[in-house]
Length: 126
Image 1 (cartoon, rainbow, N blue to C red):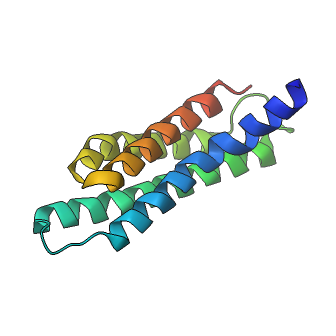
Image 2: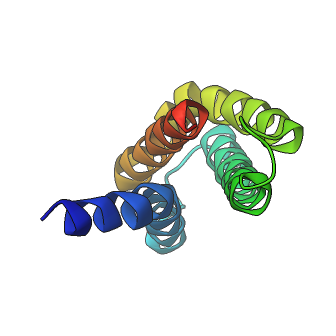
Image 3: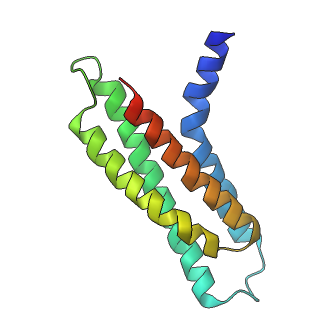
């Protein structure tokens, strides 16, 4: 049981922000944009781009941890710098995600929150 739970945590926590971002992008593409104000469309597009960059930084952080964790104790410098940049972008995207409409707002909020949780767990890793 513990091995199965460990595998779910190892694979689900990094994948959750990406799945939420894909759902947000899909929701943003299919919704009717005729009644949405232009500033709301721009802010939603900006948050989608910000979350894409933050998720890429999270993937880079995880790759650096797996690549350099055997040779040195602690987190590598590249991991720390990319985690800080990704966390800052995700923190900025969190309040901006509330400017989106309906399900896009929910998916962007969960994507940002789960990415911040991923960075928190990565920072706690030995």
